[in-house]
Every structure is written in C-alpha cells, then in structure tokens.
Image 1 (cartoon, rainbow, N blue to C red):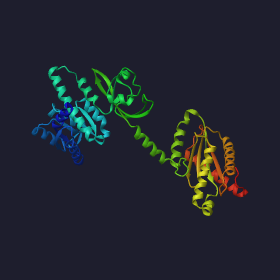
Image 2 (image 1 turned 90 degrees about the vertical axis):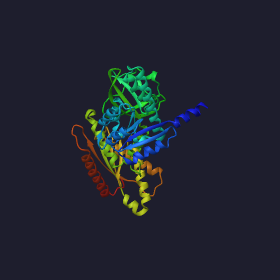
Image 3 (image 1 turned 120 degrees about the vertical axis):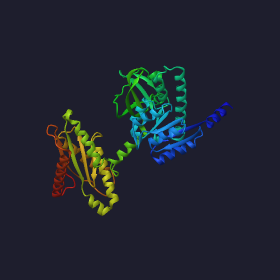
Image 4 (image 1 turned 30 degrees about the horizontal axis):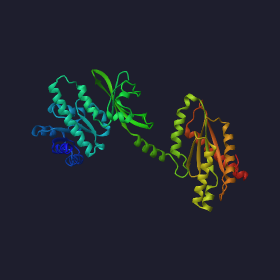
Length: 422
C-alpha cells in the first residue's frame, strides 16, 4: 500500500526542465523521453542557444537544466560559468558527446550535478538522473541552510556516488581515497577492500588511456580511463573515471583480425604480414638477432586451375598453407601475399638456417603427398634473404631479394626438368 502511494507521489511530482541544446532532432528525442516517463511529470522547455536559454530563465521558473556545453554562442566551461552566474540556485546536468568527457568532468568540479553521455542516455536513466540530481540538490540546499559549513567535498561526493562510470579518487602518493558503487562493481571489490590500497595505474591527466584489470572473479576486463586533477579535502588529488570497454575491444580486435587475414588459407595477408613484420623489426635493436625472409611460390597453380578447375586450385593453396604451418614455428609470421605467392618471416634464424628450412619443408611435402589423395602433386620454389641487425635493410628490400632468388630457383627447376628441387 505504501509502495503504491510512493509511486503515485513520484508520478504526480512536476519538474520543469530547461533543455539547452542546439541539435533539434536530439532535443525532440529528449523531450519525448521525458514526457513519456512514468517517474514524474516533466515539463520541458527548449532553447537552441545560450542566449535564448538565459532569456527563458528570466521568463519561466525552472527546476533543473540539461545543458550542452558546445553551443553556437558559447563553448565549453564558459557555458557553465555563464549559466551559474545567472541561475546559481538551479541544478545543472551536463549532456555531452563521448569526446567531451574531460570537459564534463571539469564541469562537475565547478558545480554541475552530473553529466550524461548523449549516445548512452535511455529514457529510464535520463529520468532517474534528473530526479536524483534534483532531490540531492534540494537536500544539499537544506543542509547548507542548516549548517553553512557543509563542505564542497560532501556535495561533490553526492554527485560521484550516483555516476554510472566507475569513479576512483587517488591522493598524490597513489593511494585510493574514495570509490563509488560503479567502481566497486567494475573491480569486484567493495570500498573496504580498495580504500588505502595502491591504485597501481599511471595517472596521466588530460587524455584517455586503456588499462587492463583482473576482476575479483578472475575475468579479464579492459577499461577506458580518464584522469583529471582535483582538490579533495583541501589537498591535490586525482579523479579517475573508468568505463568497461571489454566488449568494444573484442569487436575491434575481431574486425582487425579479419582485415589482416587471408580468407582462403587462414594465414596472414599482405597487410597483416607487413604490419607484424615491421613491428618485429622495431624490437630488434636490443636483441641483435637476425631473421630470414622466405618467398615461396606454389609451382604449377595455373595448370591446376586450367585442367582441374579453380575449386581444386583453391584446395592446393589451402594444402600449401597447411604444409607451411607444419614447417614453421607458431612465432614465425606466415602470409599469403595473393595468388600462388607466400612470404614468411622466420624469427631468430641465421643465414645458414635457410637450408634446414628447405629440407624440413620438402620432408613435409613428401609426407603430405604420401598420406593425402589429391589429383595433383605439390611443388614449391623458394628464395631466402637474411636480415643482419648490424647491416639494416628495409623489409620491402628483403622481400624483393627473396622474390628474385625464388624466381631463380623456379627457373633452375625448369632447366633440370625436376618436380621439386632446392
């Protein structure tokens, strides 16, 4: 009975909201969401620039403002400052795009009650955030009337407690001084477990970084972190805003892997090879270890396609890829460049190692042809170029040298009329 009465009280509550937002479509969306809310009766006024918003403040009583900081006639923190100058007794919620979060966090320090990311606002969250900010503002105002010495830190804490992002405050020595409920959920640890512990992540202010954590349950989580410098209990501290981006990173990784992988063989493609190989070369300055670039061509693919069909030709390429996987190590970079061409970077391999690789590959080819029934015999031509760290060469140059040596090998085999020879 009392619950129903409480619901009725909420639904009968009227809150006048001033939305200052220059995007017409987005403003209409927000108005519809609030007007359809069952949490309270929202009356929404809209202004598409700051000057019109200030004019409406003079004409109509307003309970709360939704404020976009980027307006045609005002930008960033200056927008909030001008609003607070004209309406210091009205709570403000910042609505912001994702790339404006740093400014939004700064606005919290300057008195805004909360900030909301535009792309993430759902109807129920928007209504709840407005009600939370509105009632907390009224409560804090009453507290200030009763006890004028209520500190700004307490008001700041109230805003952070209701934030959807994980918030952690760290002192200059790197120790945790505060965590909100969302941070407890992200880390899988309660406030008692985290307070006073070393935060452990670099506190780079003014830019977003990614940090990897192990949730208490053992699940690996990737979080996007943004750090701003604040004052906490009269001392310099750092506020870290944390958001779980694990699923987004998985999708990005999946898309990246698709972009560097050959669809037919599952090996790397040309783009993947150069990306990974260049990365490997950049790490060689300290190790002083060389490597081999091997250029391999599947002999007779055109004849297979012409006489047996392209489907069989594709199978020959898949078989070649499997033989190369058997021949080289997991740490080596194996790629299909396209057509009948394959390139491999064999890590930590000397110039003399090419002969050993050739023998191992021939052994795997012979084993394959004994154990598999195919309407073709596999043969590969190969060329190898060695990278000497004391005599740096470009990756493109090494691939070109290996390609030329592969062509010589192919011509020599034709001259000897041998199926396969190294």
